Length: 302
Image (cartoon, rainbow, N blue to C red; front, side):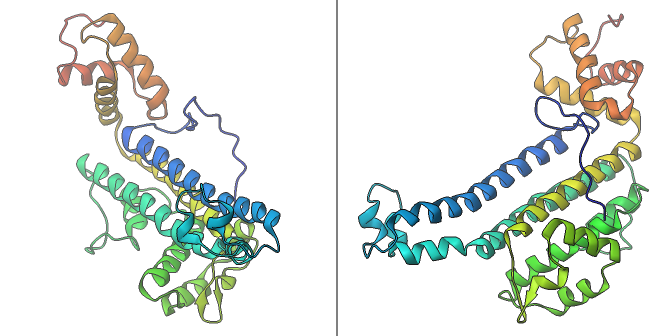
């Protein structure tokens, strides 16, 4: 797994202009950013809190005595040295919260993407099995006839098995996690080490899952990359006339311009060029979609 340095430009929203910015994907990116920022804020906050408590080193007073104006401080009413120790060692607990949060956000997007393929008449290939978190990526990529990003999928599945150990086994390392780590390819292991500065085996210590701060950022890096792979897969699999229809509906739901006006037509063409350029939609396809949806009823397209 190669961890690239991005050279792709972004638009004013921070999204890659080389990606297809359809509603589901924009919502996914926005949600992922919110979750990422929230988890990073908690991580930085724990360090900031520990750093601040250095000023009270040696004090026997509790936090509620030292900081009575801080909301909820009574729920964390410890001596400053004890509180500082907890804050300095909060990484495992924060990662235990962040990991399910990040994966749930991504899984929701993958399922929505599979539904989009299905709604556009593309047969979903899941081997007759229900689509769950463990097989959703392969079902999507195979259905879209897109190469599986195996190295990244192996890292995602490692994170998923870690999440399962936390949620269903009280943090104890389960056989599925152990077996998955043993079966990871060399490229996947190298990629994991580059992201986490540790071997995948180090996720397990003394028979239990042990998380570090880097695992938080790994979860976001892996899901971000897979999200872009899914974007590329859908771009290629869904025909241009379908993207034209989606673009017209998307534009119509966001614009205040009047239908059948030249401003509406120009706005639509520009909107499709910026957000759906990767699909290489032609203006004739846009016009056809606008007419079929009854958003443009004039005889002339101008």
